[in-house]
Length: 356
Image (cartoon, rainbow, N blue to C red; front, side):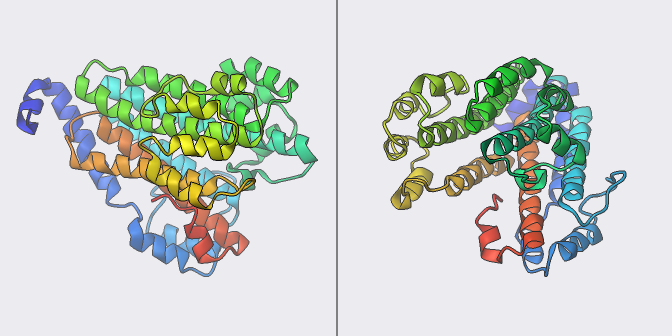
């Protein structure tokens, strides 16, 4: 069915809503950094110059934060979080009801990253007693740092609006579960809610939303299996931690979960649609290597899928959801550049971590 026929199927109110949100998305998308913007930030002398470039071009719009300066990692993350929250709230207001619920679920998932960051602080301190800063672990405020360092899971869960996870996380911490399993609990909670919100009545809405969410789930499950294998976590525990949605991994997911080693699991994943990304990583993999190159590669693939939505039918929930993913990826990239410049990391090393 062509675009004209598909539009004719939509109610007048829904068609108007999607036209409005589509126009808003394309206007906001035109302000994204793009390759030229990334190059300017990467060529800067340090994080202060990066922030000056971003502020001069109005990157943060009218977003402000209280009690923050703009020369520390905590302030960068606060500004980025506030910007994304403001954009998604605007898209929710403009979108049809079911699409709005999907975007709200995405926003909740984004907020849950602070809970995962707090869990990283707890795990890091319990492992070696280190005082790693919360900025290094992916979040941004003094409150979150203190919650993580005090091991206050109750307040962490409340801060992330995930009170239902509190009991399970406390039990997992008491049992000294490895960090990948703790993070997987949060991911399961977040993506389950996303999956429910994606079960929309309109087939076009449902199909695109499920494809984007399914791609993210495959990525998280694949990486969870590999990290668990590296830590020699039992197969039963891995299977219990997996997000219960198998998008395009098929039977290979269980094959990899039962593999004897990371290399064997990687060889299993080579048989999937993610073969290009996995093969490149496997070619140079040695036991004990970090998984971040594969992590970044898979995120780049997912980001490309999101970008591809813009060349398709514009009047569905796929476009707002794809854009939400893209602005979140850009925020992650901006933070990587700012953090890298702050720490004096070489330009080419920073580029290794960029998604868009």
